[in-house]
Length: 166
Image (cartoon, one colour):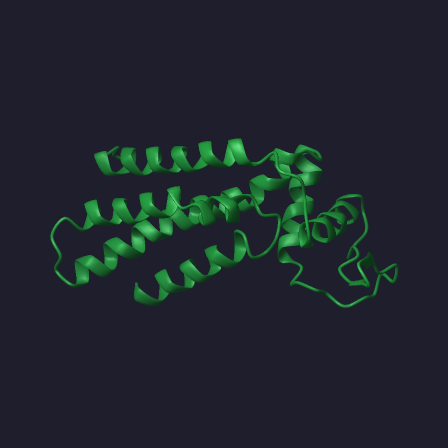
């Protein structure tokens, strides 16, 4: 694998984004994060489904309650809890990994669209697009959000867009 300037710049962009994540990851859990985290902890401890439903602000004790979100993220989160323990950085790293994927996909999508339109220096503009996303405060906040909306949803949308234009 040849190391090019583009790969170096893309790696620097990802490191900048990870630096912002590192300093922001110590936030307290709030809202849906608490419910999803509780479900993931139960899955990591051996329960198959976890508690995904809640009523009146309290977790539903019925293990067969309806899913508030698709379970993919809860199972990925429980895998990270099982492998790396229950700490803020291992829990928030699931969304951070998806955010890295989003940055790479933004680069690839921008490069592909600009190349098909015969725009010169498409790699430069793709790096600029990836950089703008990486320093966007909302993207940084989504990168540490323990919820499907933070990483998995964005990654899935950009992945399907990339596959569509490819």
